[in-house]
Image (tube, rainbow, N blue to C red; front, side):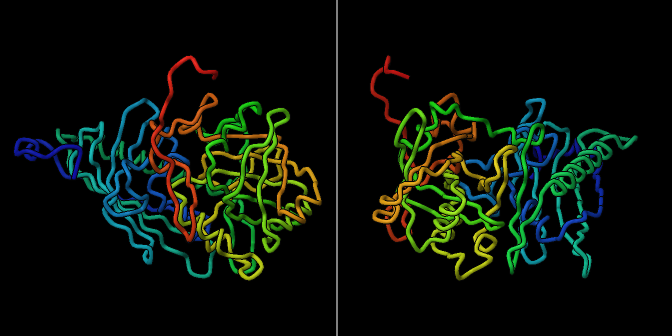
Length: 375
């Protein structure tokens, strides 16, 4: 289960190391767990990791899945999830491939809630075999420093995250600006924004008014115009999100991914009218981008902030809403330089296309006709 199989010579020359590190975080244990259990999301908060993804068609958080980590220096690390215990808020993983002279590396992370306090003790443990003698303990010290730097970065990430109270729960919210901007999120030029919707994906619609946020799924959304860019979306009269859109005059369209299949279904079938903690129950995490007081859904592949163009006849008669796109962003791992690149991206980033009755398709393979076509 390590970076490579051990041999007898390595056993004689190296040694078995084990270390433990525990530290306090001033955040409720459930919130800490919601971040750590995203096995493939470690690059969001760990400073050494520039990119992380779950390999193949494996689901994030499923025992046996492998996360592929690209470090800041370009080196690649592959780790397999060995165990997850939601009740005990513990998980373990091992190295499948690592640019380190170690074997049989196994790490465990366990959270302990301080009774009656919104504080959490994070317990990190690791065991490993070295391939060479290490009388000064440099290998152990190096692993310890990695764990400590990761813990401190996790603490900073959580400290920058705010929460919205919603009667029976809270929705995680992060405000991104400048240096804290997710490295995969980049602005999309407005003249290319229509391409974010041209392939007809199921979308998530979010809106905010007077301290209330909501998110719903919508199957009928499409680009309408180039300059200024506009789009349309159908919002049923019973939807709470529609009420927020009409009152605020703004909304956000986002493109959810295969990894968000359950989330997309949940926000489309739960109602804020009946479940004040709908977003919490649906696993929604929100963030803002500096300069836009709008709730954006984390984990999507594209986001379009829109100003409502009021058309009372269309809205009342056809439930059809028109929005002018005032800002757009994409996850550059799957949309870059004005083009989708699903064929080379992680399959978990593919868009969803709802058919009926909770049945979705993921977008398929690219089919190109000739060259020299307009860009």
